Image (cartoon, rainbow, N blue to C red; front, side):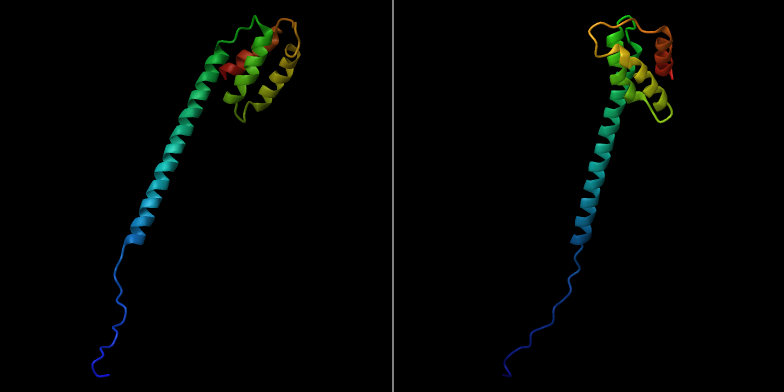
Length: 119
């Protein structure tokens, strides 16, 4: 038994792979989050720009088309301040939808729509 050598204890080896891996994952998540935020923001900005363009080019001589177009694009540009005004205008526009023949738009309603668009 004198010829046997004893087993040496385990030696700690300094390894920074956990720190490197965690840093890479964090950086990757930040890049993905930032890219998603930029894409979402640019998409939202484009939607608002298109909606404003459509609303500014409303043809008030065609009441049915005006009612549908306003309903479709006004909610994109609305905010918490003018939601009640938007709901009121949409309620008044309901009589110009869902019918084969509709009357001309009421001049007071046209003024409300123009005021909503310019605000």
